[in-house]
Image (cartoon, rainbow, N blue to C red; front, side):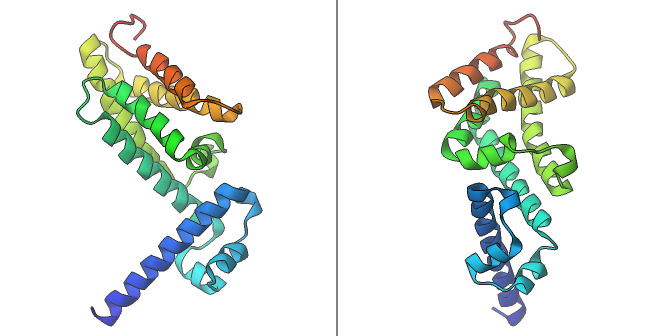
Length: 196
């Protein structure tokens, strides 16, 4: 391995370390209560090492969210792959993500993700999750004979996020209650319901 490749690998390892520590600190204490200095101190890097990889705390936060949405999109694809009822698979994927990574789920969906605060890379990763929903909704629409998949996919995605994130927003919950509510929501989009 040449010097250039080794330096690039070291930069990528440093970047991954900053992303991981930043994510953990943001999840533990909240975005507004973490400084670049605290991230650097936690990983024993100087601020210049941070700023060689990220232009700001905001860019780091956007990169962490983009990675989270990418992980969610992969989970959604995995959970709906090969299922005859892909909508139920998507709902199961959202519930699994909440169950297995509750802090990460809350950071993505319970914390403020208004359009003004979402950077382009995050929007692109978010779009991949929506695309997976769009594909599943198209399949459901084909079975029901209804059109306008763009609007229904968006409504499905936003509604499913709302149903699943309702529980962590309001305190204690069981995953059985989350899964039951998500399944009930999905039934609204299935062919047997005349409203779709």
